[in-house]
Image (cartoon, rainbow, N blue to C red; front, top):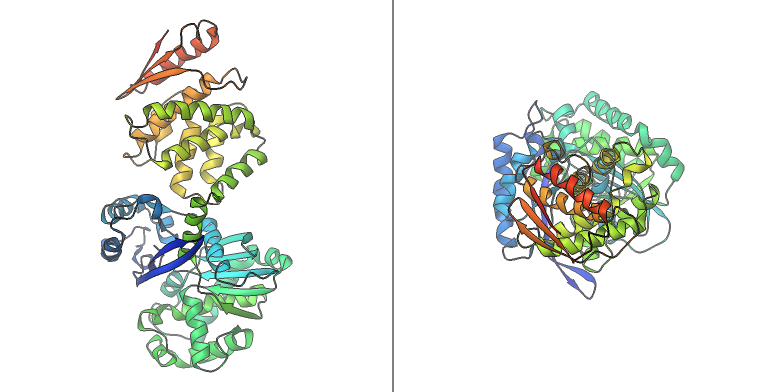
Length: 486
């Protein structure tokens, strides 16, 4: 769900390869529906929901693990995103995730790289969206530099070409703005360098098509061709005339804005030539899903990288994880925690629960939560990062309502139960002797849990018994009953 267009692609995985069955796309212009308070207007929401209702018909009957719905910049900045997401999920019947800018860049590169020849050498990829523009340098299938800048063809249209006129002054101002946005990454990207430049998505595709139809180039975007097209756009003076160049009616109003952003990129990064690739965010999402199915989950690599970067005790994290999963298997059905996502967030929270120790031992659960909430984590949506941060924040000490502040009320019961499982696992592995999970039997109830150990186990572990008694008091503050049957 982009700031300009909504896209859906349906594909099959055949012998490890993705084969596209169907593509759908509509110009919803969600970003244009942000009011002066950065709230999505009712009119914009209705346009979006009408589009999603058409997409929903095609999705009927597909298993949840085979469907991924993501929102980009407009939903990142909108203040009423949660309200819209609830309505979108009701229409679609599947969860909606919001991805961060750098995660969007990673997925775009994944989509582009799979549609290009598998050649060696670094490539620069640029994707101009409705509300943001992504810049990536990568080699083969691995991105090396990821940036997402807050400029897009819808936001630039609204600011520089709102009346449909294309003047030299407006174009100059728009190009200069794009160059200003690029200042922070310009030198670093130039120093890194690349052997080829590739553009993706609608704005760059439209520019390449116009250059080909005017026979300025064969569709290759060059510095000279951009200069010539800039002159012609200013001479035309109005977006309504862009139809003469072959620009589709629904793209005419945003064409000058997309051109200005690309022109700014050409000048700032000193790009001499660029080709267009069909792959983009939606294809990247497909390959990401396929990777998870084929056990090449980028999220696992991200978790491993975090453990190494922050010097996490991995052996202890694994012991806590094994204990939590042993508990989860006994309560998953009763507490409605039986989805793959519930198991994943539980596992990864256990592995990373001590990540904050690298900052300070005091309040390390809060430091860890902050790191997980606000870091760029490849493969993770913003909601998943929020859930992960919540479990780490709530794994020790006071179990208060502050842990769940700012969350969707519907998510709180699930995360509350998952927190209890992490807390129990951390407590049972408190001695840090990396024992296998003890033999225990759990009897879950609504807002309660009875724990029963084998005879004599707690007698030999008086400190664990003391921890459990303290935990009973912590959980009681949130009206959760913990019973320990000795």
